[in-house]
Length: 157
Image (cartoon, rainbow, N blue to C red; front, top):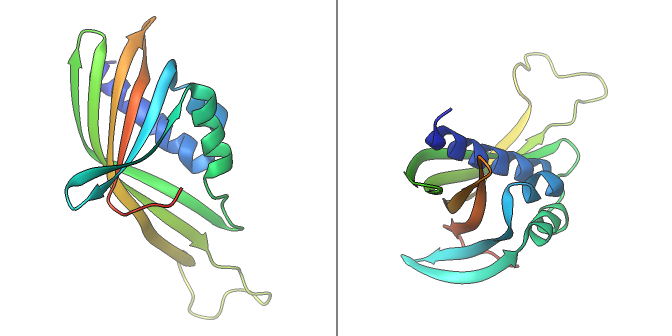
């Protein structure tokens, strides 16, 4: 597999760990001194919101800071248009993202009404922005050294 594809897969594992609220899986993606920096794109000017340092803190944030999914609920990250550059054992990635809130409808006691078909529930976009990690290849494996998140909407922490 090419370095570019391996880097893209790190991001795929990142968004899946976030969607599953899987802190241990998330922490495995970061170097021991890895960090996440979160920004709000305030009219084109990045506004620093906060940071997490170290795999344990990053994993704990995914498990405890992210809102738990409601019954029949889920989040679904999608990433788009990755731009990947590799120079030796350092790689950068710049990808757009959208997070969707997925909420399945509760099946009525008497079953779905006549004429109902297909998926029942709602899918709502709740977050957009850019993921811009810097990765290092260590012992043949790409890991995040620094991950910058640029949110399009302001966020409360």
